[in-house]
Length: 488
Image (cartoon, rainbow, N blue to C red):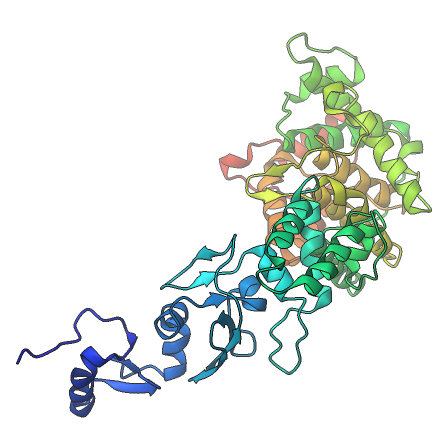
């Protein structure tokens, strides 16, 4: 009789009649061990829990071929409280090392369900929403809960404002009968209607309520705002008051502010050329729009009256933001200066706040701003809020830095500039905060930049320029030069 071997089997497998004798022999020889009902592994080192977790879906597929990953697991695709939920024709429960598989007796695959791993099916979004509206109790609830469900629908509404919710509703209507989920469909229909503001329904998720009231916001950005706010509120900052200045010194500082702010965005001129553009109104024939970017930025940051304006209400803040942006981008009418974006925008892989959520997300930031006292804290916070929302088609970095310096100047503090050579440090600090929620690099960079500006006397334009040149301020960031402080 031929000897059956287990070569080629995965790390963990389910025994069958055809290999049961070989399994028994290898287990007696000590080269195989049992870690659950009919479940064996050739791994004699790792814990059964580690092996099960590592082979989660192939193992479940071997045990329950044709089962549907359902309920909360269809959304999360990972165990909740060490429990995975599936739907099959039998129901019941399987307990494995470190994992419980809860089986709900129900319909097999319906329209929209897709084949997944190892013979399993994955419930469609529509089916998952219906299933997660079923009653559920206990520590390992099979549903995500009403607030989480509403939040997921609100995000779909924000990301696909025209048709996202309608597609979910239409698909759910089509499968509600086969799933015997007519009651759940009625509840889903009510929630979607409330999010679309076509009917009244009691909502519980903050984002869903805000969307119903036409003030939806980006929850991930709101979380970042709260995290940064907590750090800024708890931190002490240096006092760097504006030097006693005359109108000339203010204008000279504003020139370099506008010059560097545009350099960061790729609008680059030689310093002499930029001086001629701003102070002599000499617009280069070949680059009129770029020149107007510089003069537009200077028109905001070079106006003491403008920079002292502070909003008292959120509506006033929005008006001020729009007005300053309208001035900065006055040379680019095709970018709709002063108008919030109507299409999504992104830089690299970072997608900024979606158009329907712009106003609501800005309000999330505005609501936190009032409890920050130090001008430096307020400045960094409002700059980050505007930069993260990216509310306009273009000019978002420039308007964010203008709003930052307005907070500083209105608070009697020295403004912040990001010299050309310091661009990479600035961008890197922002990215650490945006992508990882780590503010320390951002705070360190901005503190250094303000220290630099505080040590420059802007009374004489040429003298200030020479000093900043010695400090490498105008160097290309790619040349690996460092920004030096004037006072060492």
